Image (cartoon, rainbow, N blue to C red; front, side):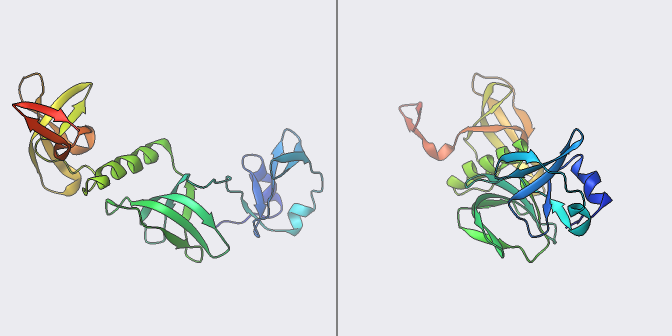
Length: 212
């Protein structure tokens, strides 16, 4: 983790909040021509410039609330999206998580050791959507984007029924879809269609399909 001291710390404060390497509740940033201190949400002017030459600083992490999604990357370049629970000096505890590299979703609680090199930030919108998509498939015991024959899917506001599933690698699965209202079969990458109904949730009664 990069540290700042002296002029580097002052330069960094022009664009980012920083805190001491001990990660105290106090953060500092330059706004206009003043150094502003933020202590648990309360801001005030802070003028002792020498302080920034006598101590080392790091970027101040955003306040994270329980249940928020984090993007975490470890030193092995393994990437995760995980629900934040709490943390202490040694570890970050999390709830449900999605291992992006392995396309694996789990509801089991766990933790990340702070002693390892971790890149941590709040999950972006696209990552939150990816987490929710993986969770939706996991509820049915499937991996993310694992479509099956008979699933009802949506693409460009049109409904289709999955008729063919083929492909080489897991990231290049091609799904053949027949329009519900009739028409020629269309082929899409599994990542580019949205599940509407899983086939196991549908019951056929007298040639009619009922969605549970």
